[in-house]
Amino acid sequence: MNTRHVTSLVAAGAAIVMLLSGCGSTGTSNSSNASDSNIISVYGSEPAHPLFPGNTTEAGGGKVVDQLFAGLVTYDAQGGIHNEVADSITSSDNATHYVIKLKSGWKFTDGTPVTAHSFVDAWNYTANSANKQASASFFSTIEGYDDLQKPDVDPKATLSGLTVVDDNTIDVKLSQPDSAFPVKAGSHAYMPLPESAFKDPKKFGQHPVSNGPYKFVSWQHNHSIEMVKNPDYKGNRVAKNDGLNFKIYTSPDSAYADLRGGNLDFTNMIPDTALTSFQSDKSLKAYNEPGGNTLTFTIPEWLEHFGQNEEGNLRRQAISMSIDRKTIAEKIFHGTATPAVDFLAAPISAYSKELKGNEVLKYNPSKAKELWAKANAISPWSGEFGIAYNADGTAKNWVEAICNYVKNTLDIDAKSIPMSTSDEFLSNVDSGKMTSAYRSGWGPDYPSADNYLVQLYDSSSADGKGGNSGNYKNPEFDAMMDKALSAPSTEEADKYYQQGEEILLQDLPAIPLWNQNATAASTSAVSGVAFDYGGGPVFTALTKKQ
Image (cartoon, rainbow, N blue to C red; front, side, top):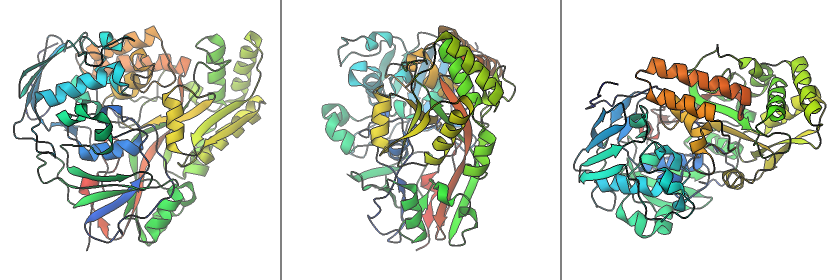
């Protein structure tokens, strides 16, 4: 591969997008009144973890961390990559060696400088399994990563591939080619941390010191997270408002009622009850645009009858073919979702409607019954089939619809399993304690197919080290992802990503359902509503009339 030199624009491998696992919420409304100033009140849900960027993989915390921190690069609405704290990222030796130059003058909100150590120390902390950070797998291609995954690893052990050359220079050596490395560099996992984060991690997680467009003010658990514009921010996302107030809800319906009542400025969680009417509601401004989120459900392989073997694969395929995605999309999502044809979202370059094996994503009840019977010949079915979900989100209706299709097609007991909050649901998912299938999905945190596929299905992302919560492991799939990361062009990488997807269509570690639009609503006073490459709201662009 030719050496790539990056100055104002970072060169990237294949471009694509990601879904933050848990989006949900319900109804603690009040904090500051929505009309007080140019502080924008927005829908939020209680973060599943303290606000450490490397341990944030769900929407409740992700939306907050995005506003507080700035990384090496940012992404524009088309998925283009632009340097932020990075001045340049230079690749050589077949994308196994990178030299990162930082811009000078950046500082954290406590006044301390952002240096090469701020990044390297944060990356080492996140990658070290002793620190139990959910995004550890994002560093799996850096030399020394495997040593940090050993059960007895020293919590202070570091990645051997990282070297701080000086305050503004980082040398990165990889254990394998990784053309997506510059793209990943803008994700949560790669955000810098000040020295105070390591001196008292518990305190920092509740009151983070950051370097992004906003400065943290307070976190009243299950009530609100408040932040104000950071006057020292030097990056690409300068806020047009004075701050944000994430009001924490346990129901999208409660948030929508507050919006209509003038007690909330903006929500990007439209409840099922409003999908047919929110675009015609004259009291609001409504938004419905194509997005990059994928919606799936996962059947973990530790469940009886669902191992990674012939019986398990037959049963997953049968369940997938029992579901009429088109009808559910029409009757429940009302034009805000499109039936899935692969594991990616339409804005992604590797997205394809022509993948071999994608017939398992099409409604075919007779074939589903045939596959289920073949599985029964291997081991007779017993028990019931359930899908768990967080009741404070918007999954109830579609989960119940899927269970009805499975029950009626396969003639088995199937039921939905509500869990009261996103926090409870995600804690069970993250700890591997789920005793049923469960709703899942992805909202991009960097624009690359690597984000959808490697971070969700590669072996390096299993066992609590990343987003592979079902612990799917297939060496053939892993090898295909390695080939994609070694490819000299986006076009060649996409071919390998697609071949990897064809393996996933056989194994179905998660069952693709729909690609979701970016939907939102605001009061009439709010302007500047925009969405990023993955369909997430650009909070820095929001402003309102006084």
